[in-house]
Structures are given as structure tokens and as C-alpha cells.
Image (spheres, rainbow, N blue to C red):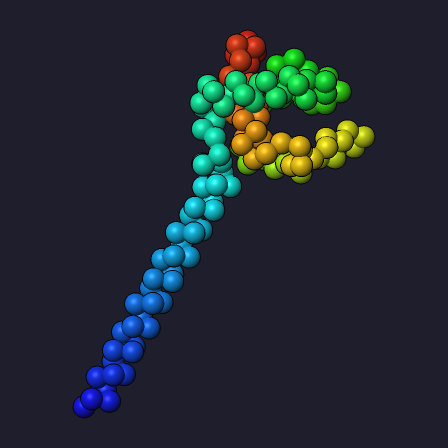
Length: 134
């Protein structure tokens, strides 16, 4: 009888540990997805994040993307509804499209600054000029 009691307790402990491990893994995954989406890095509608992104944009990006993202030697960013992850990935790792090359900025800007740039670029889709054509 004692032998079965020990086996049942061990099985119960293993079951509890396995459940805890799965819960921990799920929680870590949710946190990682949130961070990847910028959940902890920047509120993309926060005026402070947008302003910080605008400052960085005018110091580094305006030469190719134009004032307020109007375009230039690179594609216009105004009135485009791009997903935040796409913008962040492009800023982080750069992009090559034909003869146009956007350098990666991961070694230049920290993650917070890149998310602020995302916030500013996303704000360009709401400019008054965007409604003029509709």
C-alpha cells in the first residue's frame, strides 16, 4: 500500500511541475510577443514617442525620405498604413529595393529610439494631405 502511495505522490508532483513549466513557457512567450510588437518599448500613439521619433527622423531620415516623409530619393512614407512590426524590422535590419539601399540602424539606435521612429512614421498616415485624395 505504501509503495502505491509514493508512486501516486510522485506522479502528482510531476504533473504539477509539468503544468508549471507549460505555464511559465506560455507566459514567457506572451511577454516576448508583446516586446516584439513594441508593447513594452513604445506606445505608438503616445505624443512623446511620436515627438522623439520626429526628432530622430529629421536628424537622420529626412535626407532620403523627405520632409514629413514626403519622399525623395526613397519612397514616401506619408499616407501609408504599414504594420508597426514591418517598419521596426526595416529600420532595424535595413532594406534593399533595386538600386535603393536603406542601411540597418540596429547598431546606431537603441530599441526605444527605433520604436519612436515607428510611432512617428505611423503618425504620417494621418496627415491632412492623406484625406485630400478621398
